[in-house]
Length: 439
Figure 1 (cartoon, one colour):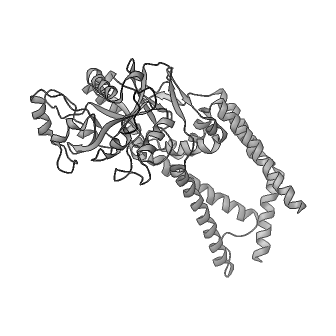
Figure 2: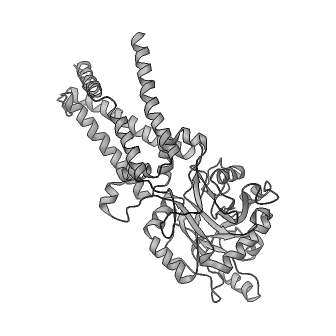
Figure 3: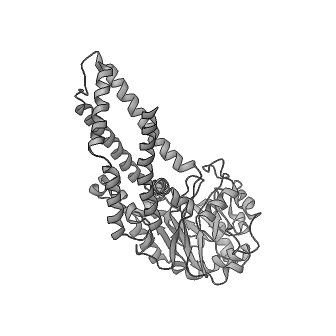
């Protein structure tokens, strides 16, 4: 009886497919065409939300060849925590509804009478378990597998793209395989001209990276010096030469004493370059002033971690207001720990002649511009991603909304790749079926 019912189920499913050939591919083709007419730039100004004219997204040939897969992984990598939860819940509900529909169409009661009930439940639990393992495997592959990355190219030679927040295996929460060369390679593939290695409580990651720095910044991505320490009860990125901070750190280089920085300031030494990192309560944000020389000079408006992305999107108005009020630089930080291959944002600064500067000189100039211009020193370009802004309706509609916005942001190369895959996959399946039938 079980075998008979299984045959009925397969017959119903295959019958539906025969009755509706190519509907899924046709629907996707329609979406590709309609979304092209309503396309938007994948890059935007993090403050205004408008498209930027001085930068465009780059996509290597390898990325375009696998655009459907790589685009899905990029989208997952840019979701906030609540968006991840919404997507997972939606997929679970879709799976349950589809399985119920299949069982009902096959005239098999989902809750069969004993003794068939335990067998049916066991099969459905096994099927659901396999589906769940495949889903989390897809997530894991997005995090750990090497793959081509999209980047950003700037139109003006005086513009410099920077990442102010990244880690290596020397951070306690960094991937154990993510060494200094991996950090530089990630930033080069992502279109960064310079990147600060800010490992937790250590400069080992920078020291290993700096050994392979180019003679001048224009040759390849430059790694700059920094560390993530604690001051004013908050993890904070301290940028620049460690000699500016070592005297104020405890023996483990974990906590920085605000009083020591104030004493140094009274002696006429240059102020620290500290950035407030996300996620973190804004009530702990203490700006750099003459009265508080141990304060922050900037704050992240984009952070690459799911928790960080949640806060910077939910509290964007408050972050911008704080930057405007306290004259703080707004920056983007990848908060890179070795997982994933997707850039969430780039910090852009105007520094004439930077390609000819030595790495140490470039770091000094960046520091000077930050302190001189503060709020106007940096412009953050970020990947455009929709956010629910606390709306229950938008949160429930996360998956279809994200899917639509993803298609709107595709380049023509990505659309062509999608169309080719829509033709190639059914053709390959048909070929395999014909071979099987002949066999």
